[in-house]
Length: 352
Image 1 (cartoon, rainbow, N blue to C red):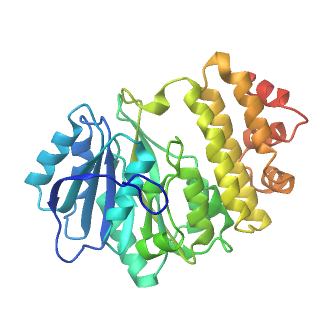
Image 2: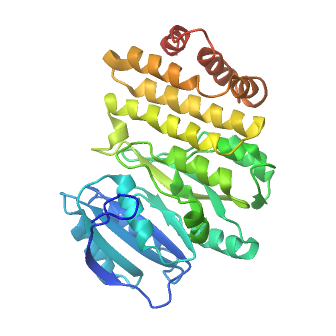
Image 3: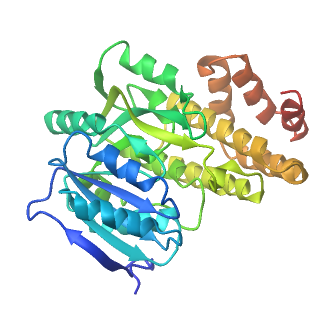
């Protein structure tokens, strides 16, 4: 069965115990071969109580028993929840299916191999209700699966610049263009569901790195955005089987993500500062993916990345380099993408 946009909407309800009156927040948790981690993810979401939350767990065709782990947890829990099963169509399709099942005022996402501080969700709901924001954004950090080490994301200076030591700031993209340069993960965002449907929020299917165009669409259209000085997401690194842990041609999919993000930006009429921050993060994501390509494909990747980067306005690249770049490394990266051809970008990589 297809929905009105041609996307598959077939699913089977495995478990359902949802309250008649939906809680404030729906958290969509896709599950695919994460049996070793899904229990911790679900535990983390309800650690501070479950009265505010409804879980929509989407088993995206797992083959490792992840559904059984989630089902056992849900049966033992008192959380409002539904567990559905679909054929394996990928993370984006699972999230899109979860969105169709959302009944709450707010919606968020957590991947089942990560975990979350539920206090951040409760804080986001409180400020969103009080200020009627469309979008609340929290900090994230990396969690190393083998060592347990926790490290911050690159966007700490952006948070510090917006917050200026305040615990919460409610702002707009016009007042804080650096919002466009934040980490793009949707798992550190709480969306007003009405807003998400108004902007037709959905994830591009059959694509890795699906969050970037969604980030641009949401931040660019939100009327009020709350930035919270609290860490919500703990993004797990270096787990066995993680797609982004390996070398290979999957990294070429970043090219399409960056293209889609640019397409979203063209509809927004961004000012120079917001466009500059968008360009800064796009170039960093392109380069990061090139670093992770296998050696045999890297030159080809950088040629395509360089060509893709030329779609972003030169004035945006120049503005980021001269005004917003955090350090000499970022300034050099912008110059490499502004060179006559891709050779300087490759040389920049070789000098790392």
